[in-house]
Length: 237
Image 1 (cartoon, rainbow, N blue to C red):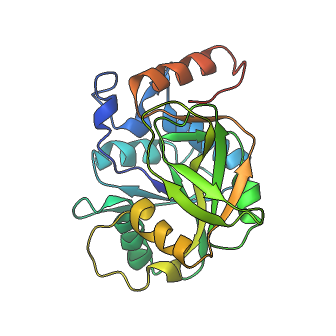
Image 2: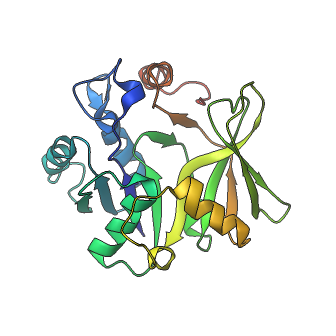
């Protein structure tokens, strides 16, 4: 199955720690974070990638080209550059249109590490969203779902720590969901996913696995330490 990778963000919150390269290429020791991601996705069976780019796109393209005879030698690699920032939903809709996509695809974030999930999502029907349970969801909105794993609501970020389920940054969608796109920016989280919840069609896929969003320096450094320690212990942000 083809995987679309959101990698066009500005990475503003991480710039105090990583300023010279886009967030996806943040160094983990001597290795770009994206290298570890791709290696991990390939190990889970993905061989076809589309990178959705905007900010510092040339850096990511250069990295991908450098790996075409190495890490990516047996993979199909494409990229789509947004003409202007279109938010997460607009970036996906633009790629669907540019590539004339018609089938299901996986969608993930370049800056979110997820220990497992690809196999679980490929076995579900679209639309489906991986979710993970964290002890502290203060940085994230909460995902509520019922006994049939149907997503029933999204809650806004909390101002105090509490446990809960969050969007893990990996989902299975169908190109038809973007067929009515009007060309304007929109958010997957605030717009598309909320619409799917109202339609009672979005499935949650609960995972018990490592999770880390490297979007802030504290969690980026935590991920680096986890890799340098040989991936010892549980990883969660």
